[in-house]
Length: 623
Ligand SMILES: NC(=O)C1=CN([C@@H]2O[C@H](COP(=O)(O)OP(=O)(O)OC[C@H]3O[C@@H](n4cnc5c(N)ncnc54)[C@H](O)[C@@H]3O)[C@@H](O)[C@H]2O)C=CC1
Ligand SMILES: O=C(O)C(=O)COP(=O)(O)O
Image (cartoon, rainbow, N blue to C red):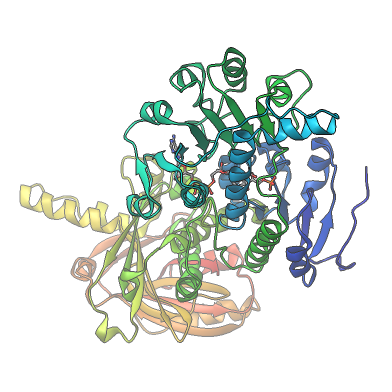
């Protein structure tokens, strides 16, 4: 196997970028400052598969097939960059599932592709290829090689996107009549380029003197032009394809040229590149009425410089934790918007992790089969996108129960991962002002446990709130039952509110308790009766175990909480997973003690806190 050529330097711990195709050095120079850049042309698919695991980024053009197995083998891969437009050689579904961002350069080679289309248009109209070959073969065949003019002819454009429109503007300058079919075309852009949009493809085929294809290669465009479509064209019509091989059925095109159903073709792209000897593409290339080029649409010095710089800048952004400007499988988020959301991204990840560690006693994925309501409040309610926040929450919820190396959750795959894990998150916005709160935006996570699911039952057994519900379920009147149901529903809620102050994330509410602490490091959270002596008991036990307290915060029950009334009733309370430490009925108010500690608290120490001294529940969280 050929050895890697380290263009940059020998720093082993720098992120590595693999470039298995010819990509312009203009962009690569940008990478070399901070990354290890390996240009390795001519690798077989197997060789690529063997080495991809070392790389953080892969930059390709159209030749490399970025398949699902290749992506799966790219354990460190964070970005696949396509130095060009078409991403039909990249398995986008697989990349999305794996959280690998795919970027391209949607503008960099548009002009080159359009100019190449015009080159083929003129070459086909004036038999340039055939004439050149004839002359080089020593012949002088002027009368056989009489062409047609394009001025006054109709150019039919299939796919009026960026390349299609650029071709239209240039062809307009050549005096051509312009028509197009594109169900998603922008009518005002079409009108400004003097292009008439036709309602059906059939009309396009019937009117075309030249038909030029500029759609992407996707399932709906594959084989879009076959025998039936070609039969609708004028026998004098000529076809141009600078988009993708396979949009026009090569066998059907060959047959139409052979039977004289159409007059000629200019082809830059083929189903298999390079074409295999004897296949339809090779026979097309050899056909006298065809002008063919080996996928040269984007091959200009200018276009290659553009696409190289464009994708290399994006690779650098992604590897440094920023968002790219042209992600194919992720939402586009403006840099200033991303900066504003960044502190909330940190907050949401902490809130998710806190939820799983604090509310989900057995810390299992099964436990997360709840419906989460995520409410963005205050100024956050007007955010253009909340995708990074959603992704951060999913990551946070799963991080305590998933191994770090399999936890590549980001805006690319968050929705897929949540769905796969059965986590349902409904996002909503509340525009209520947060004037008195001292911060302008907050976010509340509320879990509604499905009482019918086995997981919820397990939670109900372990959750002290649920115990309170059970103990008050003795009333039989219908209004009492309604009351009871309301209470039960509320008690199934597990709430965390967070906010940002001075760029620092805070937890403002945890369950029924109103608080304000920075979710950072190892913490012991104790729910206890709000009576003297509790701090001393907990502090003493931690001290004995050699655990220092960094900070402490006592959270009372939230003032707005109408459960308080219910909680002041004498209810039985059973200590959660306390090994049967039943606590007798009490009438006291409760509080939540939050202790930041300097080291891990063993489960033995945690359990030792429960029971007799009025500590009802204790959980250790690492944030
Ligand atoms: N030969 C070469 O070297 C190059 C080839 N290309 C190819 O050119 C093609 C177009 O690129 P862009 O203009 O940048 O893409 P684009 O996305 O801007 O435009 C594609 C247009 O096709 C339209 N479309 C999609 N499905 C359609 C259908 N069934 N019928 C009619 N219209 C449909 C879309 O609405 C869109 O307006 C791509 O396949 C790209 O890979 C691009 C650059 C260089
Ligand atoms: O950008 C595109 O879609 C192209 O087809 C250009 O392909 P290339 O980068 O020249 O292999």
